Length: 192
Image (cartoon, rainbow, N blue to C red; front, side):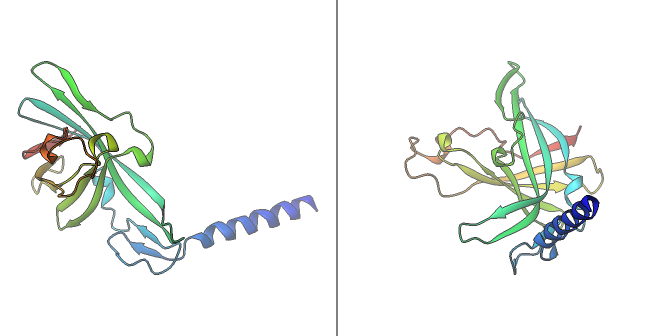
């Protein structure tokens, strides 16, 4: 009898868990029709980026680490929710002339603490956003990463651009005065 009761409970739990996801949609699908929809990386786009990439420009070494978060729950204050495969990144900057670490958030492990997010793509060009913390006035920028046609272990970083809005109570006079450690010039990143 205990075995039947345990089996019934397990079956009900399994049915409940499987019912949480309403429909699976491709990652680039923009309309969420009902609660529980899952925008899944059906085309296998995200694994290419996962890992560590390094590049050097203006005597600074940049290290980016990309992480894939599978079936991450996204909720809204209205009660709506959906699941999404997401790609986020963290980075480190070293001044090669002094060997001084200028910026390092590679120890970040929690989803919410990652500051770089994949926004989307057009062909081989992928668009990313960086969202800073309140200390730096929630400063935000966008940039692009482009897969190399000739070398699968190489990507181009380009098109650094500040978002035009900043936090209203910012102690800095201009957005350019806010500390920013992402490269502002183009560079090539190599898979490590």
